[in-house]
Length: 627
Image (cartoon, rainbow, N blue to C red):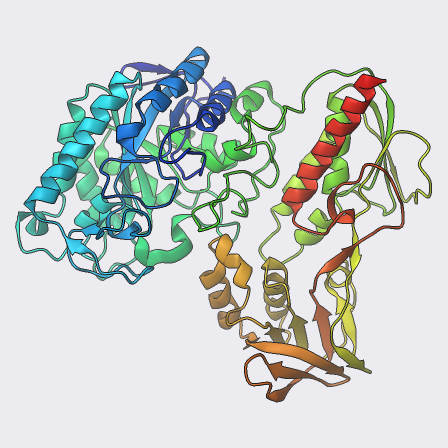
């Protein structure tokens, strides 16, 4: 049995594995209270083999209300108790995440000034916080102490203290935000030590999430400084999670699939060497591959591994690794697991839509009276439908008109920076083959002769511009290998998601003179939801792509396009030998059927395709049970 999935020990407590499910925003709360949805969410990861579950960070003082459904520690006792009761049968250690977001919080909900070590405006909100005085500092320390005591009284095995990217404790530790002239300024780690000392009295396990590289070496914490700090704090904590980033570092706090998995390996190694075995270190940083996690343990980089997004994508990760089964991959897109925005979305996963919805969506596993079922379409919706039907004991045939399976997942994988989507397509295909689904490719189904699910995908959509002998290539055809004429390329991006941006990056990387058109004030505006907006615009500019913002495409000619300013209606021209159309698509409605799923209903993202494929399979299963 590997070190990753085998038993271990932490602070005298037995661990079922060395895999940690870390704290993260979920929006599962009812008000500011842990809900039954939280309980089911954490219990599912415990059942899947997580050795440690750290619950969503709860604010230790009511001055902190960072997002609408942020838990408040003083109200969390019953929810913590229920979570422990649900996880304990699986042998999982359960810890309460505790923190205070300080100047990176919000005044939208409690309408009071943000707390901070100094009057330094937050770089994101631009809001000026209040400078904490002795009264607030004492209240903060007491808040951590009381919250830790309540957690242990509620049955928790201990707590994890947040001194990471979005925390007040990081703000005190950093020269970026701490400009005080008192003892908390001259000794910037003093408050953190006081908090850890107070929390230690609770008697439970104490973990620490510590920002060890703010990516701002002119004033912020650097790995060298963090190594000294970690050495000093080692005696106060049972484990330490080195993380990188701060308010000043944008998407570095939760990178997407443009950043290689395991990006904190070297940082963790430095901290591990600094603490010299006096505490356990945890490798964090998009660790989604079990092989990479195991290698870090074998190399002595860390003693535990946080695999949070990997376990959102596959709650059974540890159990599957033990059994040698294929793990559903995390593609690191952030599309459904990054939920800290004003829409209050529920945490979920594009490849595992049941994540976050454990109390509402039925488990796909089960047993039905077997039926002969046809699934038309081998994209993500069809593959998921076939997989679930086969899991439930049906005899399934999957018919796909092209020569390969995967559909738009394979297309998305060819967009710049998004190759990990191919891993999800590979997994879905391998699962339907493993489950014995009969697969026919290169087959056009024209009529349905048995219970069926139609998942035939989408077609190129309308074009709201006039064409005067211009060459236009649809993005799907481009990614399928269409040849382009020589000369400048213009990418038309009326959607503003990853497609246009990724295609422009791809073309520019091939040495093509490239421009991208958007009616918005920034390129790829929808990428704000995944945290990649700023980085995407930076990559485009570094690649030399011309950014035609606030522009409407009006005409396409043989050697140029005509743009109209969104605000002034002024027209101008861009050189263009070929236009790549990245607009909305339309459903393929050539085959009618009572049960439809995915893009043939309405073209959207892979999340909706997989979700609807699963739901369609459950509908067909329910119908079979009535026969």
